[in-house]
Image (cartoon, rainbow, N blue to C red; front, side, top):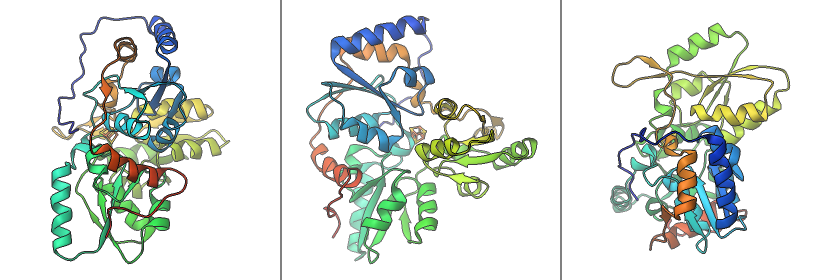
Length: 341
Ligand code: SF4
């Protein structure tokens, strides 16, 4: 589903005590036979009540191990779709149907199909590798699905060297993968509205103000931020990197700001400082590296979706094809590509 939808959150919901909400959610989980999965980018209080937390790759795998009949996926729409695709027999609920993703929206399926046809008409021999931040309709058009955690390994292991690679939708991650794999890629010009705005100038200033600090960045960040980083990785790899440092360290974190919650839980000996961003309209520095889509997830909405049994992700005709690609790409033993020539 395209999520070209309004992203402003409703601020009119009456205040409810988080502890009461957590108790209610706990009770509803039992009544509804439900498991809660929460992405590292949703509010810490939702991560705290979740049964599984993690990055896209870990959660996609966790979703296949869920024993209950209902999954609540606190994240964004494409993540709920992936959970449903991997668990067709289960009911998959998401707290807010409008929690989309600017990156996924930058690659509509009809435009991708038209571009693939154009490349084929030109006689180009390619496989399409999609970042998991894509709609299920786009996934169904691709040969491989990768996450920032497994992209390099999957490309090196499974995409034949005599094929070109069309990488969608994140141009920054694609450029980073070109560097680390040494493969040429045709890049789709998409990007994430959160990672796009980090300010190099403020990063350099923060580094100067915090001698000995280390910059850790998500590969969705632009090239100039990655160049100034000490470590680049998907959210799980960033977490592992901080855990591996036993000496108290200051980390300047260039990814969605909610990521600081799981970092603090995993490695509390460190200090974590979010890298500031630049507001696109005014050019002014902001501390706004909060994904407005992820922010649509609240404890109230988790409670409401469990109580009301909606919004629910329902099976779509293209999910079968998307499932083939997802399983081959994310589960342990990938098979041959199906869409490639
Ligand atoms: S942080 Fe960026 S890529 Fe992640 S859900 Fe938000 S808009 Fe999409």
